[in-house]
Length: 213
Image (cartoon, rainbow, N blue to C red):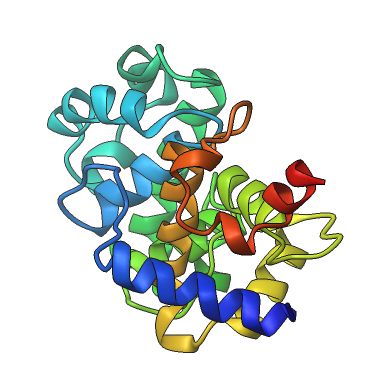
């Protein structure tokens, strides 16, 4: 099977069996999604969704959060990973949104990455989810699952994975493919014990192929 055929079969499967695939982070607007994605780094969406309601009730927009110190924000996010750094990041992000971007979350990936706490993955999430751009955000699930299936080959970092994926995924499928891979990795192709018996793409999967040999 060629790499192109592997991609085609994976896309056909997910298009049929997961026609709707969206972020599991709960948000109301671009700002609240940006806060949630920053907080989700090395933390589960479930945990982030537990703490954002109180946080965003207290700091509902960039202006309100920009006026707060990281010490004021910290108690609301203390139960997630790296709360000190993330409190500083979202406080700084809110200030820059107000001061540099007129209180509007940018659509441009490069401008998004100017914001504290926003790397390429977070910028791509915002660009794809909020602004419907064909951007492939590579988190730990996407990196692991794409390599395990065999959609990427010898990728050493998220940027390399991103480039390999968008080479074979049609532009109109790139944004949803990000969610396909995340959800597949979260519920089927889990890190420690992948559920190969339940997997609908095991016939094209490099990992499963190696299990049989």
